[in-house]
Image 1 (cartoon, rainbow, N blue to C red):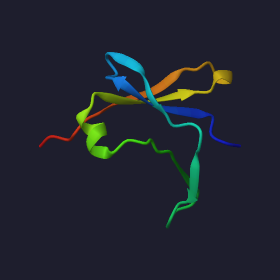
Image 2 (cartoon, rainbow, N blue to C red):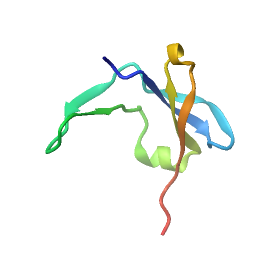
Image 3 (tube, rainbow, N blue to C red):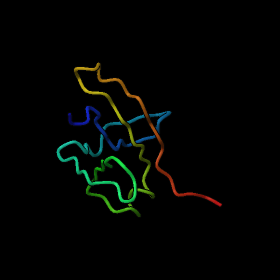
Image 4 (tube, rainbow, N blue to C red):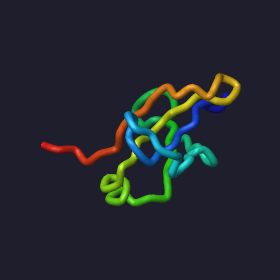
Length: 82
């Protein structure tokens, strides 16, 4: 069964969300996990990492419409500081 989660990169933070800048749902890639059992799923967006880190973006994972369109995860995208 395909994953029933939808992923978005939104403009704004989790505290002050903005509109979806990138919907990463048109293609879900899978590959066999190297050295482990199971599969890994990944998605990508047409933005460079420097642009993503310099903007004010967050990543949101949402359930499917059949499951209520519930946001189950939000994380701010930011450059790590030391």
